[in-house]
Length: 117
Image (cartoon, rainbow, N blue to C red; front, side):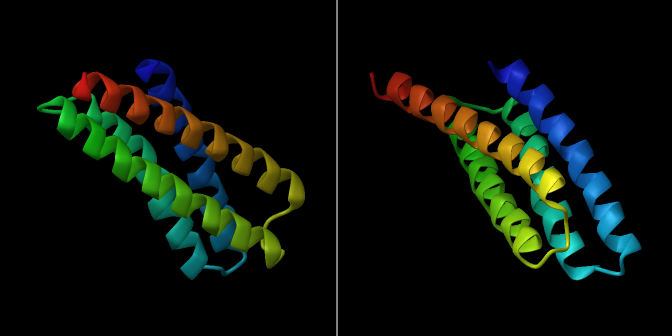
């Protein structure tokens, strides 16, 4: 599952970079920077979790990725509500981000169960 997550978060980061570029071309720099930071941090943290020193460290890194993912959903929703991105782009990115969030939550819960058994 971790490799699927690694691929999904990398692909998502590429789409977020593209969104950020599009926003900057419309002179929207503040929100562009916010969504770029949180949206690309998810994959970086997932990648970092692959080299965790322990199960607790693994869970910790993925928990931070989960927070970044939730923050990215917030920025996407804000961009959508303020008409800075079109509905189609929003729906695709939001759906991808929610899927990643569900995967992260599942891995974290499974890892916690294993740690406590």
